[in-house]
Image: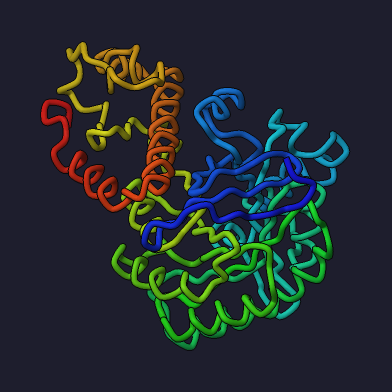
Amino acid sequence: MSERFTFTLLKSDGMARRGEITMPRGTIRTPAFMPVGTAGTVKAMYPGQVRELGADIILGNTYHLMLRPGAERVAKLGGLHTFANWPHPILTDSGGFQVMSLSQLRKMDERGVTFQSHIDGRRYELTPERSVEIQGLLDSDIQMQLDECVALPASESEIERAMQLSLRWAERSKAAFGDQPGKAIFGIVQGGDNERLRAQSATALREMDFKGYSIGGLAVGEPQDVMLRILAMTTPILPTEKPRYLMGVGTPDDILESVARGVDMFDCVMPTRAGRHGLAFTRFGKVNIKNARHAEDHRPLDEASDCPASRDYSRAYLHHLFKANETLGAMLLTWNNLAYYQSLMAGIRAAIDEARFEAFRISTKEGWARGDIAAL
């Protein structure tokens, strides 16, 4: 493990990249999928399980943790790694997206955003400096600048206003972060679905010399082809020698296609949220375990999987658990889904190492399309 934050690009296959981020708390193999631990927990999973599945890093949420239990309290209790029993790297987002999407009566200006908590109505102020302070109190390893993310579709003038504000907040966030050799703060590229604004944002952030770069404001209402078009023109502008993180994305197909366009890091609530609602991700495609056709199906989700949740429980039993509203059903499908996502990432990394990523991408998608007809 390194005492500094470093990114090493080990192999390229087309635009797909294989690399490693090293830092004091561990090494992150990229392309990486970061399970989302919004409030200090990856829902329905033990930390040890998450690690055993292959996760090198998890994500925590500044907005939720500042509201409950409070960043100062987490710091007093030893920081988020100790608090959540996760001694490995943690990335925290800035809280900006949740302020825009969850909070009540928010008011934004140049200084920052004031808002009412969706939990108890208390008023808070979140500025670039306060966001960095909170992330420091949580003691996360990779932090995000505060930005403004607008939902799409939106007018060009609204997208440009938010992008320019995010650039000014990027400068303030980076200044507040200062020099922390073993940690990193990432800038966030904004600009909606407008290529000119995306290029302007990426170029300005590159000149600020962040340790890594996030691509935000995608998967917020636009079709996948728009997201992929924006990625294809944005990633070449960003420095080759620094990691690229696509925020809040996504489906297994989104991940495959984004890796093909040069993305290194991903996070999404999809595998855990889907698991809690009865949807399983497998190499055969998606399985809705609530469907009546599974009621007497003795087969597991995937008998060849290394994950006990995928291999050792029948579809009939899983179907029963959801029909009976038993907590174990959500736990097992979440376990299955995260196992599938980490298996997918391991397959992607191996394929890039062996210069066969395009063949892997095609064969994986063909497997979903072909599917397990009796299961889907």
